[in-house]
Image 1: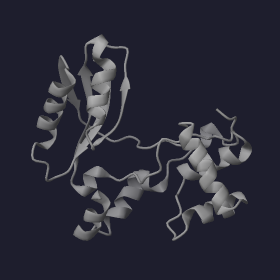
Image 2 (image 1 turned 120 degrees about the vertical axis):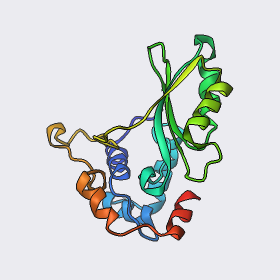
Image 3 (image 1 turned 90 degrees about the vertical axis):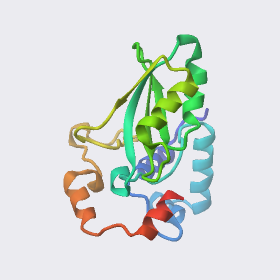
Amino acid sequence: MEKLDAVDRRLLNLLQADFPLVPEPFAAIGKDLGIAEADVLERIGRLKAEKIIRQISAIFDTRALGYASSLVAARIPAGRLEEAAAVINEHPGVSHNYRRNDAFNLWFTIAVPPDSRLGLERTVERLGELAGAESIRLLPTLRLFKIGVRLDMTGEGDPANQTEAPAYTDKGRAESRKTPITEDEIRVIRV
């Protein structure tokens, strides 16, 4: 793996911030960095190949789109952990999972659309069966404190002064609800 240079680090910070919603977003990012669009794309490709970037995608408020979601804890036999994680990761609504040093040793997040044939609970039960879970528990959100995280890759930010992106605050979510999402917009988001 190549060492991250200052431009890589600034690029990683920009990609975590407000992604430009313009016809040529990577050119806009390049302008902010003082490099060409092609250089931005090359760097992103390299950072993805090195598994520093997993994906670049939008984060939506699943509840606002009618989805049911939850954190899930599963108890998987130790020798089946990798296989179980692979099975669970096949579900399109699973964003990530991680191993825990606990009896419930595999945790993941899942969201299912409002038109799901099984619904959230039965989907999770079925995933548990397919993964060979000894036990599985839904851990639904009771109160949202924070969503999303930004990692300062340059070391220039003040950790005591970090703020959430405006859309992630209670005020930001309330503001976004003033303009209802249309059915067409929901269909586009689900693509």
